[in-house]
Image 1: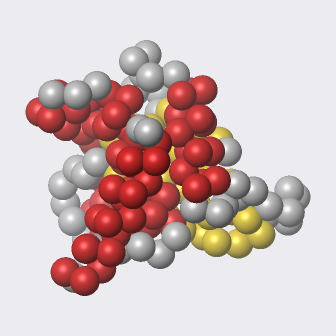
Image 2: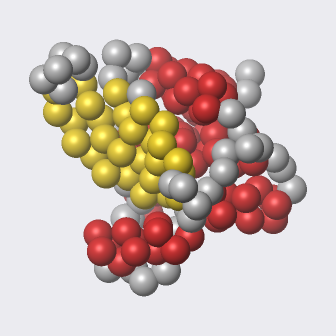
Length: 143
């Protein structure tokens, strides 16, 4: 697992070890404990550019996922893909919901990992399936 932060954001309210721990627990729960992901924290401006480029949506979002699902030749491990999180958006959403940044990052990591594993929410049926799985994982993490 690799955690990257843009030079214009600071992870001072959540540690990289907390992020690693959450991610490893989610991957283990989903049967992917031997898999790798890259998690990048950035700002609204950067994620807006990516959202426009890859999804055609000209606005910032909280999380983007880029699945790869290929074996890393060097490590021999499955590389699931990249998760990009806007730390600005995460902070704002945590504030609006009245909970801490760690809980919001946890939610965004679960959501992003599910996207890497082909869960989606393009229609009502997919949304229900993904929401149910997301809630199941969050309950597991918080039990």
